[in-house]
Image (cartoon, rainbow, N blue to C red; front, side, top):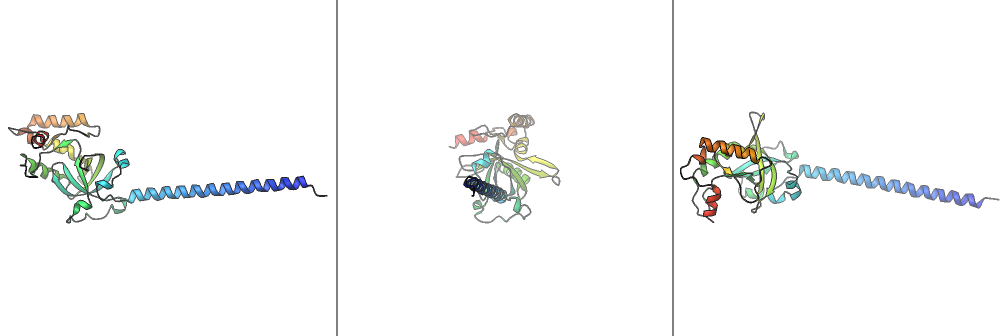
Length: 233
């Protein structure tokens, strides 16, 4: 006579094994999907090109994610436009500046500095505004730069530290430092000021330019850009 108890126990065991196998299979599938999705997302973020400032997510700004590209326009002594080149486009040649370039470039405001105002909206240009624009252009125009976003301002521009390489890439230069060093900008102290942890260093650079009376500090009736903007509000 067959033992029904043993049969039931065997069926129960097989059932438990079947459930365990299915759980293991589903877990492995979920892990595979998760890893694959994570890798795909990572690759997408690595190769994604930011068209404009609006495309840069707040998470990238808060994380101060480095963004590399070519400077294709300099508007004044503290504003420029960068064509983003993600990893997949790293070796691409610099694109031509075309009409409507604002639709495919990132507008960047140099952090920590305030350069003399150029003429716009019928307002007169400040003394040395053209020279400040030229100094910034000499540093970065048509060159590859690295920007570290620190914030976005009220105009949607990315406020960023901008660095570039000189002497075959051996020396890294900070554009804001050079503008202050040559007296072609003053330290920005307005709302949402961003110093990237370098405020004391920036103050020392400015003080040295003041003592040497370089740039704006050598003008007889010098008016800070911030004062000029308040007067022309």
